[in-house]
Image (tube, rainbow over all chains, first blue to last red; front, side):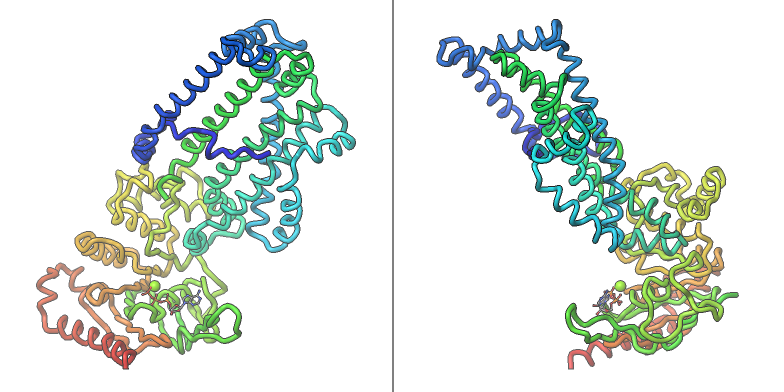
Length: 282
Length: 265
Ligand SMILES: Nc1ncnc2c1ncn2[C@@H]1O[C@H](COP(=O)(O)OP(=O)(O)OP(=O)(O)O)[C@@H](O)[C@H]1O
Ligand SMILES: [Mg+2]
């Protein structure tokens, strides 16, 4: 279920935050952008031709133009009782509620694994049990337990987001340089001060990377969860459109989902540069 | 006046992961550092200099022997023994001023007071205009000065310095040696400086201690007065041209080479 985010986003020059970061970008990233754009153009052209010459029935593959019109139509008139904005908003609300929950639980859990033998002993098996499970495998169980409402969807998404956040926090904790900790000790820091003022900040770059991965995992789980049980949301919109064989809206939904995943990824990268500009200089 | 004492201190590390065998790294080291002294420790790589400093700081516990301050055994690291690290160990998420203020923050000193004192310390190390700078915007020499200011902020009785100038170019290094000397004489803290450079040891220290390897032990403990002469205004070339300087330099070089040959034999 996990999207490999590293390959999802082309190494295009997203708006550089500061000169230092820009200077560190390899020149190559400018070199692949035209190739990537050309590839996309060729795919869209082939798609247009295929539908224009009736190679594939419009029922299976509507033209790019039809899909654009469908996006516009859903945005203005809505589909299955909600506009595109409402579907999108419902999905985003779930993902950010789940993100908040998994950060609040995941970071302390990761700190516990990274700093304490007992914490590691208790939490490791739970995380390792959860991590390889496809979230849809336990969605039915969650629905039996807490019903079909928002809570079950947010729970499933949180469970999908937790392992990357916990594991990246624990990894970040372990990568805190010994000198950083020793320096604080030699200035008289208490264990709690060391945890909060040295180990936690050291781990933040790793935590943010984990959060980015979690967003990817959460987003794909979200859409899947909405396919099964929801009355609003992008996954639900696609599922309903598929039942009525409205293929243009199915494809429109996929395009919107991909676009949002892409934007979330860019947002996460910008946050990384704003919050931990020093990570690039370690 | 305080005294940091190591008495018959030995330190053994596990020889390898699985066996219970140990390797003696320091053997019966006795060293007293008074708070008006500047001790330089020299010795070949692997002779246990860093281990000695880590013991004094409280990062390591001795296998046997006692480490105490004014007769009280140390329980671990403490604010009265501040450490300056070879690769500065400054926190990149804090700017220069907040790094200096870090020990004050640990003690719960209010933000305004912290700023004020950090600015004062930055001025003392000649970096009054660098407070708002990010750590990665500073040169190696500036970073070490921030590191020293940070250690001073904790108002220690002893400064423990593990090759703080080791990674700097010769010119910066020479400048910072003078600077270190001045900081030491102004701050009235005892200094324990680990260094690879015989010249640095002679020029700064009031005592030069030579550590021989395998196992690490003190083979010489020699008083020196060149630092005080430098502080009194004597010029560096003048000092280095004296017979006393050359005799000490040759003597220490001989000592360090002696155990190198003993090793090869
Ligand atoms: N944590 C450790 N575990 C096992 N052996 C260690 C450990 N730390 C140091 N040693 C060993 O102890 C000896 C002394 O190390 P130490 O770092 O104190 O030497 P040093 O004099 O500071 O050397 P250098 O000049 O290269 O910094 C070395 O042989 C080293 O391999
Ligand atoms: Mg060393």
